[in-house]
Length: 235
Image (tube, rainbow, N blue to C red; front, side):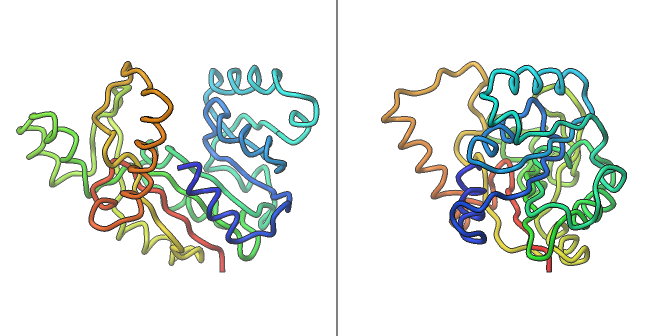
């Protein structure tokens, strides 16, 4: 997914331009730090105190130049209008957040307002059209059958959350003035791998990533991915 984001940034902005990036629901700051290391100014928003503490600890380990490019804000992503002026950012990330929001439309509209004209809105969501894939491949036929007519599911943390359908999000992005520009599938082949599975040797891991990248861009494979990465552009 990071490669897909980098591809979109490279296509939209001159090489070397320092972008103003807002990472909503930044978690422990992995993506924010990666982008700061690339030279961008990054603001991370996170409401979980434990995650904020982890992000601050990770940031403290970075060189001074990188620390100076990152601002951490403890708060709710639905309240960006309280912290920032409209049009303040070139890029807004909202990765792995919408599944925890009952009604995401208001959140997305607020995030779109944060974008400067031509800015990029990057979303990572659970694919509501493919909820039956994981239980089906695991041989849990009852759960697979029950997944066709719902957007609710239980994630690997044991939390009851929700998924989003591509068509619905496409309509929402058009309605908030950041129409869909590109989309990818994420975790097409590897979604059923357990968290404790060891990372393959470098050569095999590179081939695995190449296969996932290809599938995430190719029909019909990307439509059955566990996650969708959507990129909208502010008009």
